[in-house]
Every structure is written in structure tokens, then in C-alpha cells.
Amino acid sequence: MSRAILVLYAHPDPPASRVNQAMAEAAGDVAGVTVRDLYARYPDFFIDVPAEQELLTAADIIVFHHPLQWYGSPPLLKEWIDRVLTRGWAYGRGATVLRGKSVLSAVSTGGEREAYQRDGFHGYTVAEFLRPFERTATLCGMRYLDPFVFYGAYQTNAAQVRDHADAYRRHLTQLRDDAPPEVA
Figure 1 (cartoon, one colour):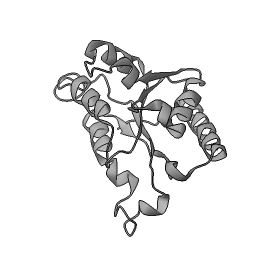
Figure 2 (cartoon, one colour):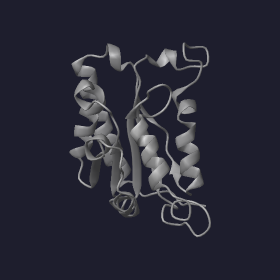
Figure 3 (cartoon, helix red, strand yellow):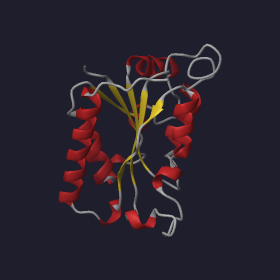
Figure 4 (cartoon, helix red, strand yellow):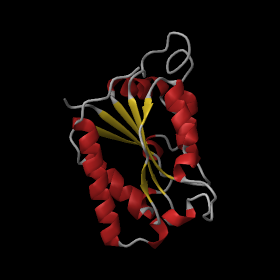
């Protein structure tokens, strides 16, 4: 069974990001994956809510793909969530459109893995910084998957970027091809 994947790519300066740009290109290579470059599409932050909701309706898996900036997402992704995931459509009474879908956070960090530990420089794990995405998924009746993280983007080399992009491609392919778990 092949599932449709929508990648919501949010990087305010894609040419400056070797990691996220390579990941977005790798995702675009996977059949059944739609990569939506939010900054290219909405540079003015005026989001076409009906169009975005239509894409969400058609997707089985939604990927929030972005760098971890100031312990959260870039501003356009937050704006997208605020505008598109409306009450009565994404959550609340009668909202069933997103129920049973899966959500994945695919993020990069500037710092190394060791910095994102309880006893590390940042004092929290990446999963803890992504808790708002997890709660958003839960509120909408979706299943939140373990994050796909690239650590140390500032210190990485071309081979590591290529390897990670390849791993991302394989991860999306596996998600596309695996049967979804039963939703309670």
C-alpha cells in the first residue's frame, strides 16, 4: 500500500542551507511525495488556506521539515499552522479530516547531538523542543512519529549531508510503503 506524503518545507533561506536543501531535493525524488516550499510559495506570509487544506486532505502523512531555530520552527511554518489548522476543520467538534493521519518532524540543528541532552548546552532534547508539534498532532487526532533529526549542520561536510539526504529519502520511502498502524 502506497501512502501520499506532503512535506511542508520551511526554510527562510534555502540556498544558505546545505542540509535542508539536500533533504528537500531528496524528498522530491520519492514517488508519492509532494514537497511544498512554503517560503517560495508564500514570501508575503499570505497563505492560501483552502489550497493548503486540500493538500492536507489528500495526504496520509504530513512532514514538518525545517531547521530548529530558536528552539522552534521558522515563523512562516508557525503562521501556516495557525492559519491552516482551524477549529472545526483540523480539531474540535466535527473535525475528522486529519484523524488517523501521521505527522513527522524532519529537522536540522546547528549544534551537535550532545548539546541537545538534559546535561547538554541546551538542557533539553530535540524531541522536547518539538513537543508543540506533537501536541498539535494529538489535538488533530493524528499520530506523531519519532522525529528525523540531523545534528551539527554547522560543522558537517558534504559526505555527511549526502548520507543524511539519502537516509531521509529511504525513511520517506519506508513511510510511504508501510501500512499505517491501527488508530485507537
